[in-house]
Image (cartoon, rainbow, N blue to C red; front, side, top):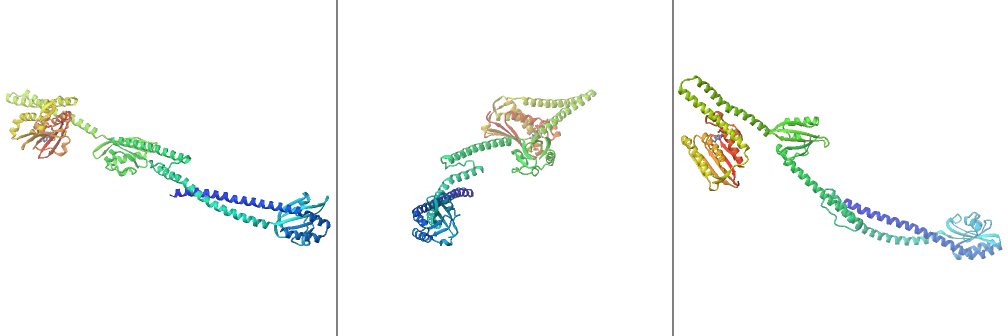
Length: 578
Ligand code: ADP
């Protein structure tokens, strides 16, 4: 609003001052001109009067009676309302219509007398010391033949002219005031008409400058202002387009950075976070971190020290750090031009896990093979030394059991590596109920021996599924085998039903259950909860690993629920669409 008023006032005041200045100058010049015309007219009039009186005063001068001259001056002066002075050739005043000529000083040096002496006539506008007033003078030379006999001087008071001029001045001033008032009104209207679109433009440009790019100038005029308005609109449109493009690009970039599983953030050399991606915010469990110091959120001392080290001497750095049981590879990339650093935290826990699993696998496999081989080795050596047939038979049976165990481990390992390279399954229609019942019939003697009943509940909708019959049976045998092996009392139940686009197979037992801390690892190769128990009942630690592989080959998943001392339930989910 302030700007609007200033623009309008500036416009209005400047035009008002211009009008005032022109009017004053006009007033001054016209008055000067009028004054000049009045003076000129006065001089002309005096000239004409002097000519008409010339003869009379020539006669009087020739006659040479000063009293007559003075009387004539007074008489004509009174009649014509002017001052008349007659001056002798030597400058002596012979007669004057207002003053006593004897009291007047010599007039030979008066400018109008000097001019008349030279050129025959002269005039001047000057101050009269005799009368103490301003007068216009006209003097003519009176000659007889070639001899100058005197001068006739006529004059009027300037005051009289000034009074006349004053009247004209008043009239002109009155007219000018009216013109000025009218001009003010016109200037007010013009200023308003001109400033309204300018104010509109200023207001809109201000809004555009503040980032409101969809603002447009609507009152588009013709001429220069219209052109300016259209240019501003074009500029705003272009800015809006560029701004939107920039926003889109920024959003795409943000989406890409946010989609990255790597935790990323940029920090300035002052330690303040410039930006951070979603993964990092999730890791530190904070959302509004931009503009704040990194040490408020990076609580891990090793990571903090690592960044502090960078701050002391900015350079590219790399180090492993542990945050909440996870191992990260922390990279600091120094961006010199931006005086900042890109910090990335790459979760390498899975690499660490794989490394550990590999180590465990080799150790477990060696152990699984070494134990029966050592046993076989010992019994073979003993066999060579004993004679008793019964004892020989007992040792051979032990050797046979250990060979079978080695074979079992090797077969399972071979099966696992076969599953690992397998790409395609031989899928066909499988009657799930029939398959499960067949599996239970395999375990029937064992179940009967333990006195454990089994229950099979297969929903009609889940009865027929598409699967690799041989592989699926293998997976179910491994899981049901475990249930039979580990359950001593209670029951074993297998249920199957359809759930959305999947079929779920549930195998529950009332066995010892699996402690919480082991649940995440039971699908690893050779992982067993209790090694001596497992060995006693003939486990190798490969059964669940094989089952998981088979289910995943079917694009399904397997999870386990277990309550220690209550039982375990395995859930297998297989997609219905083959
Ligand atoms: P194993 O041949 O030793 O049974 P698995 O891979 O089949 O090997 O199972 C891994 C481990 O998971 C077992 O050693 C056992 O401790 C545990 N486990 C599997 N199934 C059950 C179950 N139904 N009840 C209790 N523990 C189980």
